[in-house]
Image (tube, rainbow over all chains, first blue to last red; front, side, top):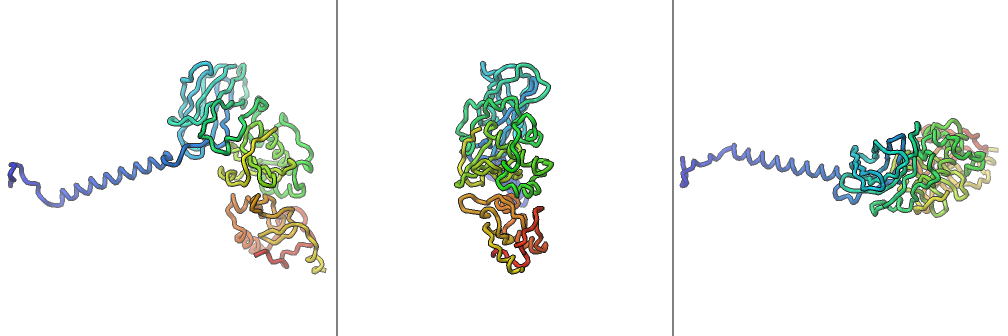
Length: 286
Length: 90
């Protein structure tokens, strides 16, 4: 059968109805996929923020950069010698913990880098490579050149690592906190707020730091406080003057009384724990 | 004699979980949050257990009571402390 235009009439039946459903189903699937994409990329959740200061470890002609963001993002570093425009780029995995390996560095050279995601730069920094290749890796100072407005309030008040930390490893793993190159702590009775309780804290949290005994545990807590200022760890002081310090890279938390003695020391296992702590952000002094 | 022990004039602060009356500081205040001091009687650490571990005071108390109200710390239990006779704070 033909209509007025001479074309055969479309048969009315189940085939066009099914076609309509299929088109509608495809459209819905596309919308769902788009929403999943937007949620994963953090669209609409505000700018990405750094948690704590970034760090760089230099070994030979290679530097390893580490930083933490408040949500999962891509990893991108644009870098090059500070005297020229940075042109080399590193791209890494998506996540909250970001690692970037910068290869082919020249000794005794100042490098400038812009770290962040491929789309959003988070911070511009500089570091200097050691004068010659060293068999052991060392954490070197990372100077913040441009602290952007993307930094959260808690990190705006944090000093960048000072020159005092050069040549030392500010990562607060147990081996570092036991290092004999760091200052030796006074006797435990002088470093722990309530010395009679240190065995309880050691029993509860000593395993976090592979502490051998309460003395070792208390010594690590004391050293963590000593290096916190140089390393630029975020800190808060509450109404009673209790100081809370957190190293996001090693998930180490220490609380200290106004007289400088330790209150407790542990790894909360939760990056947001420090954010929930009472008090106002403070800049630590050595 | 037991009554005399229970009437020991403790000067510390009360543990909200087990009622131990000799904590060096209040377990929690509005200004400073959890004290982070560990109760030697039940092992509860305000600001850690009720935050990181997500254990409420009530559930910690129930667990401690079901375990037979044991003394948690390696430190010696003070003579005045008789948890069986003490009713933890509501």
